[in-house]
Image 1 (tube, rainbow, N blue to C red):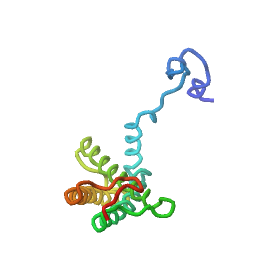
Image 2: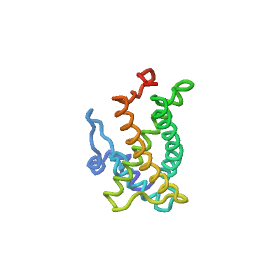
Image 3: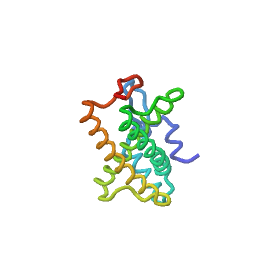
Image 4: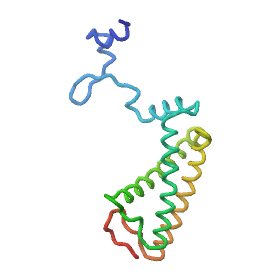
Amino acid sequence: MEASSMLLLSPASASQKLLKHNSMNVPYRRTKFHNPLNVLAMAKESSEDGNGIIEKVSVAGGLVSTPVIAWSLYTLKTTGCGLPPGPGGSIGALEGVSYIAVVGLVGWSLYTKTKTGSGLPNGPFGLLGAVEGLSYLSLLAILVVFGLQFLEQGSIPGPLPGDQCFG
């Protein structure tokens, strides 16, 4: 058994110094996963070779989200309502998650830009960079269509099914 694993299993005074206590005074070992910024840094380290799981999930989410938002904005502009709820609310849920995903991608991009001076890495096949650009375009389209909707109708429809639409 290695010395480091002995340290974790042993109640020796040296290992007690490494342990912190939570609010119920139960000792625990603080890991790098407790800090969200450490998780982002680890994702960046693992993604330097272009194989990061966060990059792949972001690419997939962005490639699904941007067309859904385009459909949603077109529907909002032509009917005064967002997308219909769909079977079991699945289309409405996809619409809501798509808006959150695009805002999240733009937020990640802005955070990376302030920390590194450049945007997101290109990612696998350059798709993360493309998704980043599409997310900014989607955000611009959201602002334009919501602004026009507000000017024409005085408000935008609420996010919940059954909220008043202007159709």
